Every structure is written in C-alpha cells, then in structure tokens.
Image 1 (cartoon, rainbow, N blue to C red):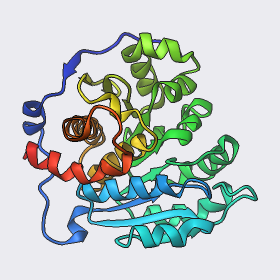
Image 2: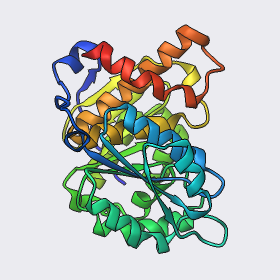
Image 3: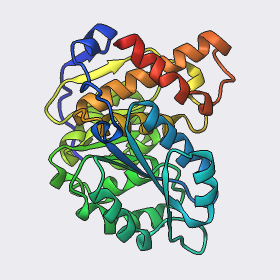
Image 4: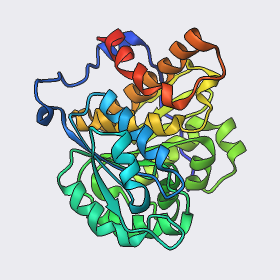
Length: 296
C-alpha cells in the first residue's frame, strides 16, 4: 500500500468525548442494539467470553455469541446473558468457511458484528472471511487474526461505506499494510492512515499510544492507559467494547475513539487499584460501565 500524508492529530480527552456524546440509552434491550460476536476456537473460548462480556458492559442490549461447537456449551454457561450459536469447525478446531452461512444469517439480524477475536488459524480465518464479508451489510468490527483478510483483500470492506472498524495491534497492522512491525512503531499515524484510506475502514491501532483514523478524517490519539493492558485477552475486551458501542448506534469513528479511550482508562483504573502490572483481562469488563459513568 502506498503511503499518504497523515491527517491532523487531535488528542482525546474526557471533554472531547462529552462534546461527542454517545446515543442516549433507552429502556429495553431492543433499543440498545443487538451485537453478534464471532469468536473463539476450540482452544480459545476465553476470547469469546471476554469480548462478549465487554460488549454488554459497553451498553449493548442483546448478545449472540457464535463460537466453535466444541466449546459453545461452556461459553453459554459462563455468559448466561448470551444466545450461543455453535459453529462448525475444521478438523483442528478452527472456524472456517463452513461457518459462514450461519454467521451471515446471524449478522442479518444484528446491529453490529464482531469477527476475528480468538481465531488462531490464518488460512481457515481467511476462508471464513472470503465467504462472509461480501454478505455483510451492516457495521462490523474486524479484529485480530481476521484483520489479515484486508491485507489480502484491501477492497474487502469497501462496500460497507466506512462502517467497518479494524482493531489491531502494531504486528497485525504491519501484516495488513505489508510492512515491518518496526515501521508501524516508528510511523503509526502514517501507516494507519494509509490503511484507512486504502481499505475504507476506521483503524483503531493499539500500543503504548492508541490511534484512531477514519478515511479522510483527523487522527485521534490517546497517550494514556497502562502497561498492564499489554496482557493476553486485553485486545479481546477492547474489540468487544467497540462492538457494543456500534450496536448502541454510535458511528464507527465515534465507537472506535470512545472504545480506545474507555479501554485505556480501564487500564488506568486497574493500575490504581492493583498495580501497574498483574491485573487480568477478565478484570477489565467490569470497569467499562464505571468509565462510561465518569464520562456521563
């Protein structure tokens, strides 16, 4: 992908977010949106659980979790608020093209779709995305392993007219952009902006700073957070928060910017309570509504 000139950088603050308020929640689960989380392989049911809970903690009203059939019952017990849909697996316990029909049907009923969290096999995930993405018409969060789809198919989300959010770490963004991770670490704004324009998606890039870039828009940056967020499962929580905000009716750029700040602020709260290091991703979702209350 060819590089472009980075856009204006704006710092994310509580005052900025308060002036860019989320859709007002109403009574009743239907009014707060239905999120579908497609996550987890046979060895990673925890990823589905983390993302699912985070989406509800962000305010979504209804939740469906679509996950590998071998672990679906376990996910259903841990997340009793969800309708859990078992998906066909490959012989190695991954989600592949055979799951696409079920997921596409679920997505038709949803206000936001999250796909990619906890999916481990690159080839199987690419096959799933090849079968699924042309059939998606609503807002979608493309996370983690699923992000590689846009590296292979830069046009794959353009039909969504910028209603897709790509949630990635520096290594994943480097894969999409076809560069080295060191390039992303030294030029995060430039490379995220290039991917946003080329793929017509909103990019949320995590790291020591968080950057959000929409095609043609400003770059939103938040330099807070905590090193403790660099722990297994943390990205799953962030992706779930963004999906939950999308389901509530936030625009993709807004959902990504709010989601980045909320996740970073959760890390700050946990650092204050338990120390900079040592807190777990499973402790993050419970702080999400508290941060949202701080911003109210």
